[in-house]
Image (cartoon, rainbow, N blue to C red; front, side, top):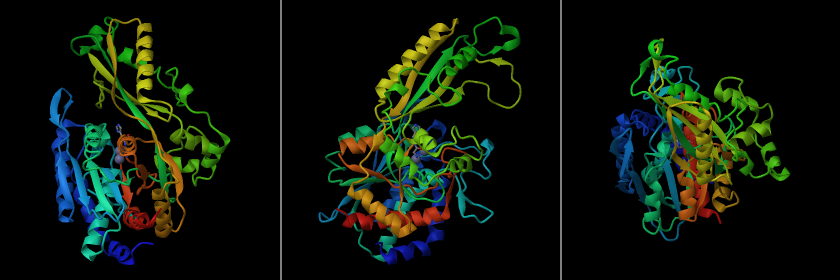
Length: 475
Ligand SMILES: NCC(=O)N[C@@H](Cc1c[nH]cn1)C(=O)O
Ligand SMILES: [Zn+2]
Ligand SMILES: [Zn+2]
């Protein structure tokens, strides 16, 4: 049961919470682009300032430097906060990220991605980059703390908080900090809660007990010293782009089959019992069609679709750096191109193993191409897959909180995305980790028109707070 005063406070402060979300969406904290790095630092400073005002002890922990596009730049700091240290209470570690994916209006956004914009049709959708991934959820935690401070309510558990600014770009520096601080800042943590993923559909809340890992690769192909005129040099020189496209076409089929030998063989066999778990999830293939805005699902079967996201690896081609991509018809032969792709990893497919399989395969395929271009392949960043025990008391607490706030039992899901630090928390702190999502499956994280529904933001804030009360009682 949640505290009724807390629940009423959240309802009464809905507009103030939305205004605060608008304030943080306006900080374009894109971690993947050095031109935006100052904004990521600004967002870290915003978090520290507001947590301090809410009564937390806060430190901005520098995480060192990073080389990005040949430039050495400061990594954004980890924002470490503590609130309460009552030995009679449980201590919960909250994690979230204050960086976001890039967003350009010209990519097709309906509104300016850095201005939180309510849907003019009054649907309650709040559009803006980071609204769902992950600024709405991290503000959800701040809203809970604000409500307790202003109402003079005792927090049901002690909180430790770790908010990072590099999650969308490989969480650089964070594992080292956790290892270094396991007997320092992180000492005494009983369990971990992360709100940074999504429901499977638009109606059913879920608790998530698994994530896929990720191995992100770059294939670089180069030849001429400079870009060339295709009329002058076409059919005269080896073209890096042609070689790269050949290589990239050997990675995955249109049906999503991974062509790198040895990967799919590593996937654990499917048991009847596991298959049944997918049948009970409240989901249909139409939820995928609705979320992506077109009927393009790989399968018509519900369980096959869910397994594609939760238990099988996937390989996606992301882009080609150095290629001509502007409107118009530039007749160029690019001198050097870098193909980017990633593989989502599942249990039994480790990062090291997959990196070797991919590197050997790409080198072997390149050797088959008759070209004088040069090629290299590297793994840019990665994280291992993670699966938790959903029978832990923290999951039972979240189950009860979901029933109290939403009036339905949650689905139990594994997420297709990756939050690399989850496994680090589980392994180094030896703690159970719970993923308690706020947003819906159609929020469009990483996509254009990312949004968070007002009801998910407000009920999500209630859910996070109610979970703390249930956690305090749980055993
Ligand atoms: N909400 C979690 C999330 O979006 N995680 C990213 C992590 C990542 C790894 N490399 C680039 N981003 C994801 O893509 O799953
Ligand atoms: Zn995220
Ligand atoms: Zn993300």
